[in-house]
Amino acid sequence: MSRLTKEERKDRWAQFEQAHRVRKLPITRQRRAVFAAVLERTDHPSADDIYDSVRRELPGISRMTVYRILANFVSLGLLCKTCHPGSVARFDPKIHHHDHLVCVECGAITDIETERPARVPLPEVRRLGFEIEDYQIHFRGRCAACRQAAPKQAHRQRRKPIQPQRRIRS
Image (tube, rainbow, N blue to C red; front, side, top):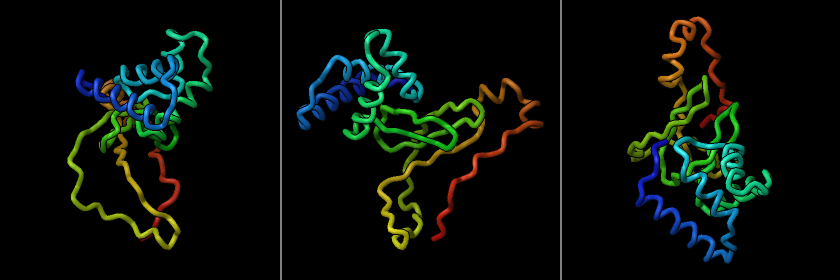
């Protein structure tokens, strides 16, 4: 993930304050520290990554407090939570639509900014009682660092691709 520009950071802090004002939530030191920690990162940090960062500034903060604050930020629309099979949840300060490259070796997640297709064929899921609200595309493969670290070994011992948990037939 690329670092947010100064203007993007300013906008995100304005969104942070607006969301708290509208919901009449207190803007605490802990909330500010957690939000700042996510905005400063150039990766897609896990809750534990954020906890480790915030703990340096606020040694008394609990892991559970960080988890609750992150969940709250997701529900407020201030952060996106991204998950892929076999990995912990990660948090993304980029809340606009974008897709991800996911390394199956090291778990790194890289943002890719692409134009959304005008029409993505969505599966027919009404008969299952499901309503699609949004979607994300995760392209899985090996990042440049992992490919460079062991190019010959990768061909011999390539990991099995992660299988989808369930396919929906339309």
